[in-house]
Image (cartoon, rainbow, N blue to C red; front, side):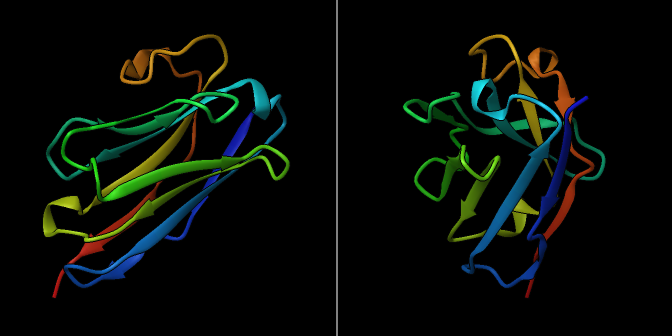
Length: 124
């Protein structure tokens, strides 16, 4: 069973930066597509970014393109989400997820394992 644990969330002012981390254990991390999703109050969970198993390919939602960067360190079984130029509308619980089998980055049901989430609040 794969366990995913997010960290690095918090409160930040508009225009600020945060880096989320997601540490994986119990599986073959280097073979998984890893994704970040977010869910704001009263809204559905939405795709943010994803990175393929070897790190050579990534995908971003239009709303975060150019501001967020996803990366991974397979030696540390960790995926990161660097978030810059944060806006109040980025406020949400951020979840990391792992897909064992394929590259379908925006397909939520494709992901097999999920973390518990990390709160990100962007407010002055």
